[in-house]
Image (cartoon, rainbow, N blue to C red; front, side, top):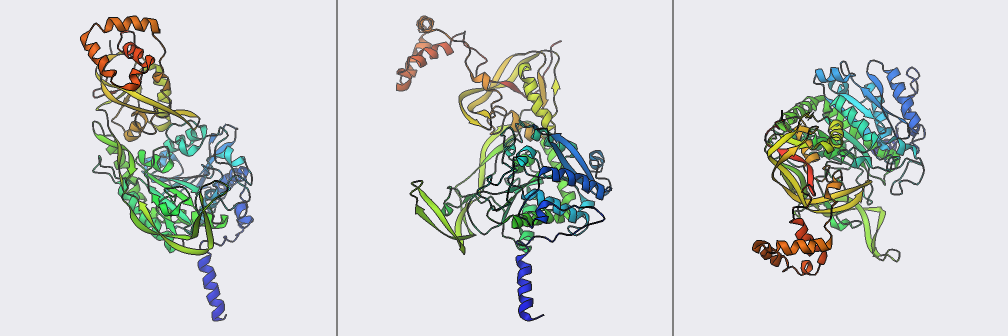
Amino acid sequence: MSRATLAATATLAVACLTACPSPVRPRPTRGDLTTEAERSGWTRTGRHDEVVRLCDAFAAAYPDRVRCERFGVTPERRPMVALIASGPGGLDPDDARARRRPVLLIQAGIHAGEIDGKDAALWLLRDLLDGEVARGALDAVTVVLVPVLNVDGHERFGPNHRVNQRGPEAMGFRTTAQNLNLNRDHVKVDAPEMAALLALWRRWDPVAYVDLHTTDGAKFEHDVAVLVGPKAPRPEDASDAVAPAARALSDALQARLTALGHLPLPFYPAFATDDDPASGFDDVDPPARFSHAYAPARGRLGVLVETHSWRTYGERVRATYHVLQALLERAVTDAAGWRAAADAADRADAALAGRDVVLAWRTTSEARTVEFRGYRYERVPSEVSGALWTRYDEATPEVWRLPLRDHVEPALTVRAPGAGYLVAPAWADAVAARLDAHGLAYARLDAPVTLADAEAFRATEVTHAAFEGRHRATVKGAWARESGEVGAGALWVWIHQPRARLLLHLLEPLAPDSLVSWGLANAVFEQKEYMEGYVAEEVARAMLADPAVRAAFDEALRDPAFAASPERRLRWFHQRHASWDAHKDRVPWFKLDAAPVQAD
């Protein structure tokens, strides 16, 4: 072989780390475990019946190390399947729990048009079981793989669902048959698919949750972003080991992917100003509705994988394969530490009572300059939109020097109750359904409870916006001491339990993914009884005989908008009258610093 041929072969080998499809390797003794993606040379992806067939075929080919499980049914009555792969003692969740065996929960197709993860994970699973990659990983961990989470969306199949993406020829749709975005549903759990996934989570208690996606966005050279959470520190927990484990895993994955020939990023490459590369990036710590933030809310590692949509399908599948390979290689040495960090997080969560806990973070304006591998571009006026638009020249790579804002500060800090929350009986079933989905403990009380020193949250301002099929409520207000009685059937939810941090996300009204924020309590913000205007006129005159009321009303009239509104002026008196609904604007659960005492 000539030197020129050798050089060309070496160059091709390096390029193939990201660009070349894998060879199709027949396995006559194990049946056909290849996918339509492999057989088509990475131009097509298979339908869901292929996933179901392969789930059974893997279990048949590797009966001692793989189990296929139907773990749910979609609204359109399709089966949801998971492959469980493990060495000895890891195929049963009870055995895995008894052995404290680390479990990795990996899912793809939560957005079914972004389907790289399905084909990559099935390919990697075959190589993993054959000992061709990450040797020893299945002795260290159990892998629970959901190749397609959004099954109904996957079967809404067509060539035009991802116009910002190169390949495959046809793919599924972003949302479910109920038009719900599953990656906004981890906390509220509206979709049956999410309820099924969380039931799988409760059985297996994974130490890490891996979510496989494809980006939208601009054109640049970086081919994959891997975000490992939690990113932000946990200042209320000095013993926290999950955040340090996340940082160590992120660093290891970035280094390994670089060694494998990729251009990885540890942040999501979305420009701060849409379509303007010069604006740089805001590396945010997202709310718990998203996969890689929900896992940290449970005290677990969250890993979000985003391949770059403008790479070919074969390149994207290979990049995802390499992320999973790198993760499993780390599992061989680090999984026991991930299990220990998760156990420590459970203990720390059970000790949050009375502490200040950060539930939301914001990115500050503090920036550092990073070198980013892009292409030459120009921003030009558009006769179509009337704005500037960006034209990229993919034939001319260049390095951009851009601001990256990755410094965060607390945006919402709440005080955890000293004992727990008491949910009013009329709301107990709705709240219990969400607590059950997340595996949070509670008890139903069979007698009334007298509240002598509880806290109630009253909203002072409420705005609504439609999102994900709900009317979200953004509230302002505060907890304040109140007394009263709550009838039999109330729900007592104690704070001294693992996943208490997640409980705060659910029941603290100001949290961005609380049940209040998702509109569960919208009815309490509506006025149902009214005082007629002529009655309010009479009531007002009687009340104004009190000098204190007169002084307060005169002070209110100093606001021109108030003074100019007859409705607001009369409502001012109604709100101070004994007929005003005392339950309006009060969230239907209470915060208690001592366990409730039931009446005899």
